[in-house]
Length: 293
Image 1: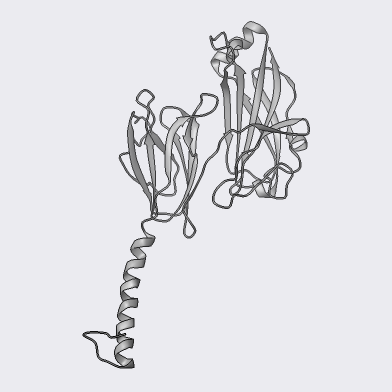
Image 2 (image 1 turned 135 degrees about the vertical axis):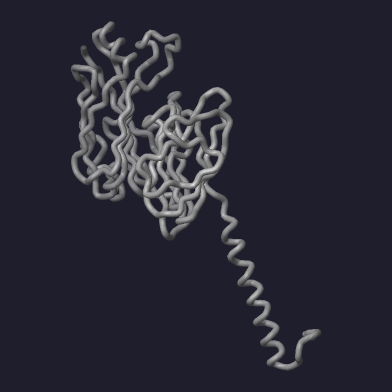
């Protein structure tokens, strides 16, 4: 090979190759920084409830997350709940009483830690988290509601693996957030008195630090609605930073469901219990319960 404009011989060739490597070193950081930011969109879930999709994302310190609300009819906004530091946001309606339709923007996270956010219109029922780490890859978690699988006497939707690991955490496995099988870890009476559903979940070491969500679902027909086949959410509770051991919960009915309970003297519900560990897949258990006035 003949190199024009450079001294001939081994020394000239070495200088030429050193220059090429230096140019490559300048280009590589620019390529690495072009990684796309995770995107979180306001939308609705399988039962008509409002959700962030996906509800979680993980970025490095200094990372960016995109937020959007494509709806022209439903207003949403973002409120940070005791964050490690206030993210720098542009184009996102942020604040306790700020919301809007058809918006999109980004938030930058400079400090490591866990950032919990609620919708400014729908409150804790529409919540999500951003985890900012000092090292690691940028990921996001999508939660869907596929057909159910049966575990003993319990029907549990088989959630897809979370994040890039494509891991599985079925009830009773070593990585499951439940301490034991779903039938033994979840304690929930099939019949209760009053306007609240009470129960408990045994949390394993794998589930420590995660969250517990309990949704109460009722047929719209029992609430004197028009849609007889539709199930609507009539109560919700979210517990975060779980500890290993017994986690108890009490989920009250909303005003509409309490009125239906008074009229009919009883109300049939589905209690959907979701345990989301810090890492890995969520486990969902669905139980039937009847409340009596």
